[in-house]
Amino acid sequence: MNNLLDRDVPIHVLFEQLFCQEQPMQHQLLISFINAALEEGWSDGVEEIVYTQQEQQNGVLKDYQICLTVKARTLQKKHLDLKIQVRHQDFYDKQSLYEWGPPYLNPLSLEKNDPFIRQSFIINILNFNLLQESSAYHNLYQVTHQHESDQYIPNINIHYFELPKLLSSTPKKMIEKWLLLFKYLGKKQKPSFWLPLIKEDRLFKYASDTIESFMLEPLSADHRCWYVKKAKQEQALLIQGIESGQRLEKERLALKMIKTGYQYQRIIDVTGLTEQALDELALKQYSKIIR
Image (tube, rainbow, N blue to C red; front, side):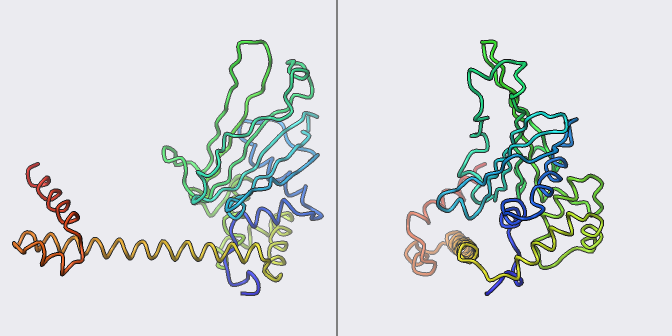
């Protein structure tokens, strides 16, 4: 495996290539995405990206997530702080989404009329369904700081975008186009609406060309490591499934033998289950009968 052409590229790698590299149109891409993501419930818009920093992750986390801190200026000349996070389900619980607070707040800048008080947003892009109580692909929450003093701390707006819940192939909103881009850009097999999607917007065409060029490059050590870890993880899950299925089959056979009246030792010899496991099976079966 010398490059990524024969593999699906994970979303955190796509995001890193589009928004965390020194590309000519990096800020234009980021402005377009942020404005699309914050369109609901927000009347302003980002005009300029002032600063970006990719947060460094330690250990296994760095292989499955991206965290990008952004400072921006809006059309109304307001300051904006954002944290954009791309998370994978298997490592979602390794780090809290609520850990981040605006770092710029201090006693000298907490007056309500201070123009340097920034609005704060967290944008979470998830490759799995997190919020089981909602069928919507986009959910917005606000965290309000409650203080007894008169100090002013702005609300933090938390957006969740769950890619599996976006089922439409005819996007109407700009954010839907961006999410479909994230969802399919790194996949070998593209849907039928893919070409019209990237042709109608020059930024999407640029993003597609950028990722195609990246996929032709020799595979880096970091990305090779990611695929090796992913393969090992999938193999471990497969083995776990096989072992679980084998145990269930042994338990079904053992129950049948118990009902037929076989001696425990004979059942143990045939199934390989322990005497304690047989006792637990018999107890479960008895509990079902007396209910």
